[in-house]
Length: 247
Image (cartoon, rainbow, N blue to C red; front, top):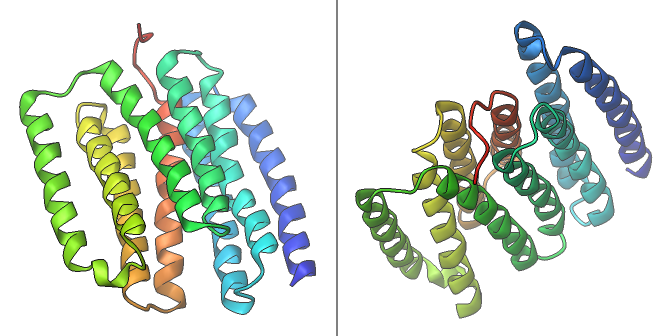
C-alpha cells in the first residue's frame, strides 16, 4: 500500500502542477474557466477515491490516508489561491483561509476526531465571519439559526447514547451550531456561495449518518466526494467573486 500511496501522490502533484499552470493562463479568460474548474474537481475526486480505497484496504494506515487526503484537498487550495490573486480582498482571503483550515482538519480527523472537528469548526467561523461582514443577517435569520441550533441539540440528546461521552455531545452541539449559522448566513451571499455552503452541510450530514449507521464502501465514498465538491465550489466562489472590498 505504500507503493500505491506514493504513486497517487506523485501523479497528483504532477497533474496539480499542470492544472495550476493552466489556471494561471486562463485566469482572466472567463470562457475557459469551466475547464479549469472541471480539471481541479476531477483531480480532487480521483484522489478522494484513492483515500477511500486505502481506508477500505488498510484501515490502520493513518499516514498514507493523510498523504492522500492532502492530495485530494490540494487542487482546491491551488484553485482558491489562483482566484484570490485576481483581486486580493478580505472576503477572498477569509474564504481561502477557511479552505486551508479544512484541508488540515480533513487530515487531522484521522488522528483525532475532536481535533479534526476543532479545525473544521474554526474554518466554518472564517466562512461565517466573511458572510457576516459582507451582509449582516436579519432578525428572522438570527431567530431561525437559534431555533435550528436548539432543535439540533435536542435531536443529538436523543441519539447521545451512540456518543461515548458528554464531551463529544457538547462538541457535536457546538460544531453543528456553527455549521447551521454559517449556512443561514450564506443565504445572503451570491448563489454559488450559498450552494457551496449547502453542499458542505450535506457532506457533514452524510458523515454523521456514516458514523451512526454502518454503511458500505460506496456510501462513504459518496460522502467524501460531496465534501470535496463543496470545497471546489468554495474555491470557484473566489474566482467568480463580484464582491467589493470588505471594510
